[in-house]
Length: 249
Image 1: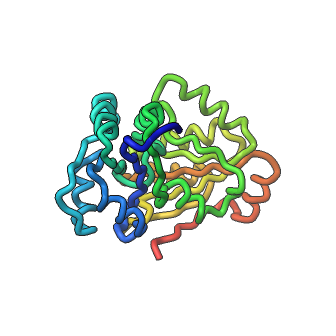
Image 2 (image 1 turned 90 degrees about the vertical axis):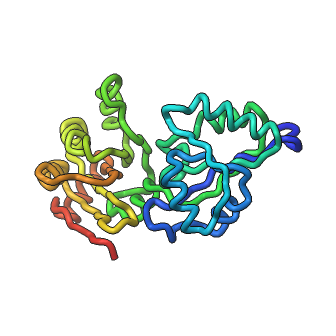
């Protein structure tokens, strides 16, 4: 990456999805040693830092709506040789959260960039999913309008398990689209991962729609869709096309 001796280090740090105990020792050490912490929501970051008994840190608001301005400020600090830690509200930054544009700008600066791995909603859900997960495509959040139909058509055409993120306001719509575009799929849903009301469900899209239509829905969703073809048929036979609820252990 060139001469980085005079530049600061940008650390991309994964933080808990919900349960604050799910943080690595290295993440704690990196937060403690940072000259400044860039975060989506300074209030939520403060809760985590208090839990870790970390105080006196400069917090930089960095989210989707101020990204360009925030990146300019962070790059200036890196140029001065300061070490900046980036966290999102939960999970791993840049994975359907702000981060990519900052990482790219830091690369152009030839700053040090290091990941501090840890929690991710996608990998947490995949690890307990009863559908095939040896090969998967991470789709994240679909566009709300423009390009949504073509994206769904593409995703339905690939021979792979597909992983979506979705909000409670659009989960029923997404499930309906999965039923319409995908060929006889099963879906696995994980929501409120590691939190008090975490829930894991597996079944057909229509069963999931029935489950959520009349409920006041809360929490972010990970939706995993089974791959097409014979493998999906075998999985439907094994799970008997009925969903199970797995409550928090």
